[in-house]
View (cartoon, rainbow, N blue to C red):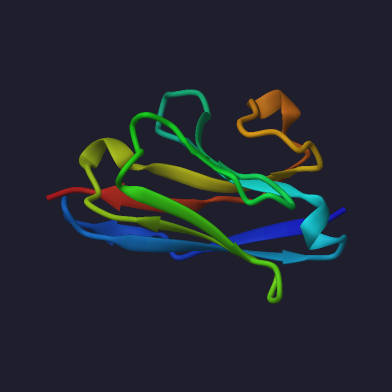
Length: 124
């Protein structure tokens, strides 16, 4: 099974950009659809974005559509989330996730692998 490690979080002001990275090791990277979930303090984990294995179709939650871009580099076992025009409501722990399902969006119950998370804080 693949292991996932996030990096790239931090504290930024509204309107700024961040790029999150997810490094995968073990397993076969291309066997996994990958994505990002986030969890704000006191809230449940929520879907942010996914990229489907083999076809690279991309999906986004309504709250990040047009601002965030997901991508993957199969040669280097990496996945990224480019986050632009960040808002205070984007503040959360962001988790890199994986599933062997080939489907566009998936819920927390369908996630097979979780990273440990990286904190993103957007505040003036």
